[in-house]
Image (cartoon, rainbow, N blue to C red; front, top):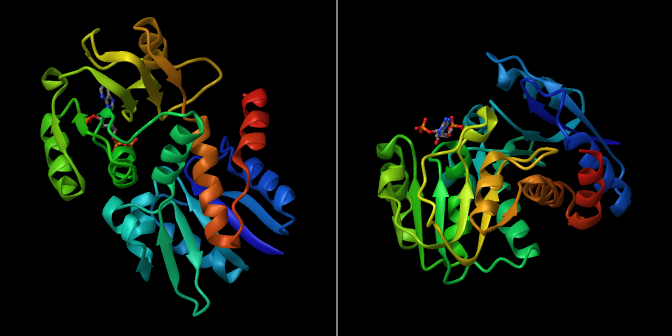
Length: 269
Ligand code: ATR
């Protein structure tokens, strides 16, 4: 049986083992997938040990996505651009390939919900690693414009400059936000502390969607606020299952059906 895992710290609450077990059953692929807490100071050693023990690939979550990026022998163009790796693949020659599937997970989830990206006015909140990781597939979907707003305005401007070749993308502080938007994506970690970025009420165009990359048993503060403003709210659980499905595809060449796994996970939240 081929071995896979998710590396994180902490990693005990990860849903990835349950998700990949469901994918394996669905596709008839015999894989063993566990959660491994890697030491903060030696991620590369944890990956080497896992490979020595028969590991074929891994997912990588907080706080190791940049460590994973650095240890790869080869990177996909989208991982290079994201500066982060969430999927490690052991190549036939024994080298390590790195890819990132977070952005595909997000864009796939938006598609599943029927949210149009082509021609849309999009606002992205946050300018950290989570946002950098999804910008390429978002911009490739052809929004009319994409504005990045962040507490630290300079980080949003720098991020916009890095992706300027892919479309009409601008960056600034929350005070520079100019709506209305058809889609607002929350990629800040503010939800974790129950906080809401300072945003104008008149942010959403009629029929707009609010997407939070976070999820939980209860709607996040951001989604509660957005729904009170009249937007349709979607949380990040589908992105989580979607990125897992794309990783599974990279390893096994089979793309699992996300919907039933997402539904079961939602029930269990
Ligand atoms: P991640 O990997 O989740 O993106 P990160 O790279 O540390 O983590 O980025 C966290 C993001 O959440 C940043 O955009 C951060 O804003 P700053 O760049 O100004 O630090 C944002 N963030 C965190 N807490 C926030 C809060 N309370 N209000 C607004 N933004 C917040």
